[in-house]
Amino acid sequence: MWGFSMNMNTNNFGEINIDENKIIVFSDGILGFESLKRFTIIKTDDSIPLYWLQAIDEDISLPCIDPLNFFAEYTPVISEEDMIHLGVSDESDLVVLNTVVIREQPFCATTNLAAPIVINTVNNQGAQIVIQNSDYNVREPLVQMKEGSDNADIDKVDR
Amino acid sequence: MLILTRLIDEKIVINDEIEISIVEIDGDKVKIGIDAPKKYKIMRKELLEEIKSANIEASMASTENINKLNLFLKNAKENKKSDDI
Image 1 (cartoon, each protein chain N blue to C red):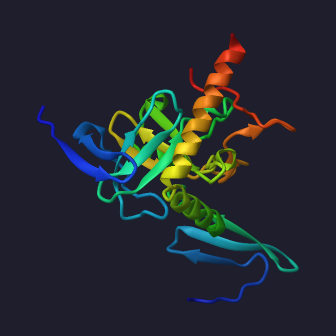
Image 2 (cartoon, each protein chain N blue to C red):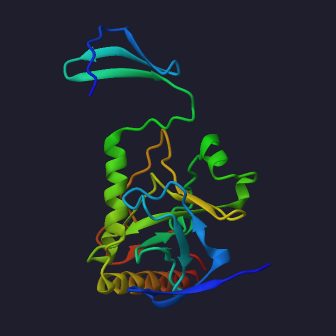
């Protein structure tokens, strides 16, 4: 199969090489960035549980987490319509990420559990899906502080 | 914008597909019932606005704050590891 890759200059990661096979198409865009349809996932450091959803047609990148690393019991229900939209035939083909708002104080970072980024790894189609009828927050604290302690308690960081 | 006056239990039909009814009025709260095919995503607009602003904020992280969070997460992970031993 013919494949191509391209180079792109980014503010956060310098010059990056994007493999065609790793381009994820968000046909509906992402709220706030509706015009951007093509993204790729960047992981800068294996020891840090942070992923970046980098747009290809403009230098925009959104930090994300794998929710299982932080919220073990997080189980968003994705509607049948959204599954069809993403062309999902097997739920295990899905990757779920949650965007993170990074603040000046690291422990003030929040993550959006109400509208995860969902990617079908078989056809590289993605969407930000609003989970219906849930109590998930758009700004859930990323780490829970132990009372009276300076140390953050992370339940389960990927090991 | 089209503005219609409705009484409780009266309905509005859009395109023979969507039915909107006024279910209950209590002070400044109005309960609205919507019957629509599942292909229509029905959401509270504030939620979409909230998601949009969280996305935009997520994209604006400064290098300095990214580095601080990276370090924080790395340390948290290492602490976690040493706790496990």
